[in-house]
Amino acid sequence: MFPAAATSNTPISKLPFYFLLTGVVAFLLLNVILYLGIPSFIDGNVRGPVLWTAAHLTLLGWAMMVAMGAMYQLVSVALQVPIYSEKLGYIQFFVYTIGILGLLHGFFWFQPSVLVTFGILTVIGILLFIFNMCKTISMMPEQTYISQFILSALVYLFITILIGITLAANFKWSFLGEIYQNLFYTHILTGVVGWFTLLIFGFSFKMVPMFSLSHGFGETLPKRMLPITHIGMIATILGLFTGFMILIVVGLIIVALNYILFLLHVKDILQKRMKKKLDVGFTTAIMAVLFGLVPMLLFPLTLGFNLGNRLLISLVYLFIFGWISYSIMGYMYKIVPFLWWTKKYSDLIGRANVPLLKDLMNERLARIIFITTAIGLIGFTIGILASLSSLLYLSQTLLLVAAILFTYMVFEVFRK
Image (cartoon, rainbow, N blue to C red):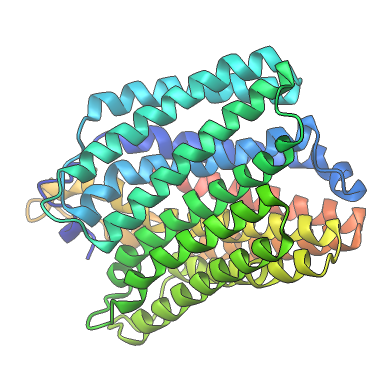
């Protein structure tokens, strides 16, 4: 199944591995740092150096690194065009990595000058990535709804980083005044919903049918989803800056509706599948969709009825770690073996015995990892909501153990 996806447009280079493996190391590190942030979760005060560091390590170190690495390969697979410049990709990796390391140092020790300096370097790294991806997509003879989702995600990423560097500069020069709060919430919205969610949607339209061997499913829903997303995002952002709560609630309801349409589309794909038994990685990715559904449905209610800051924090946590991070874990179970198998063994077919893709990952260990992670995520979410320190520490212990095993499992692929 997977080797067929590797066309002449998709040679496997070392570039995706640089990003993916750096992302896995970041994933392990953030699960250590989150221990230091548990007192902040207990107090309900999530605006501090430790959790700022953890949040950016999660989204820029773990999720972004993996997303970039995957895109340098999967854009070619999904859109059937070669990457515009692999050389630029290497340059971008080193610029971005240096920027992130400095940025995380600036957040942890709260050094505004460091935040601005390395924030600019991080922005440059992301801009190089956006340029490379946009040039790649522009080479397509005709745009598809998948490419439109990816382009929209890149636009929201661009908006997110511009707001981010503005917020970092505000730490040093304090020029934003009353609009700081509005920009802060917009930064979160465009990052986790506009960038990561649309990106996962876009690639899922290609990977879910590919992984489940599905054919004959409808494509009407995904073509309607993107305009709905933009309407919901614009309404929510307008509500944030005008102070009209009804606009925020309506906007989030529209975004939630879009998420439900995605679920219905995935259901349609799975009903048309030929592969009856789904492997543990794909099952994890589906479970992540359900994790994301809960906060999507509850965000409008929480804000509309002012149900409290603690509930909002727990929902944001579940959305970032249950939807975005858990999705990435599930898809990496498929992506890493595919990349490594194609690079190492594809030329040996017919000339030597080569392992199967499923032999590169330990499915039994993966099942333990993903179940442990799910239990930890649910426990941590409840711990935030109920302010239970013992449950938070226990849940984070489970998550750290799972992260250690996940890191081992991924790196073990390269010994096979």
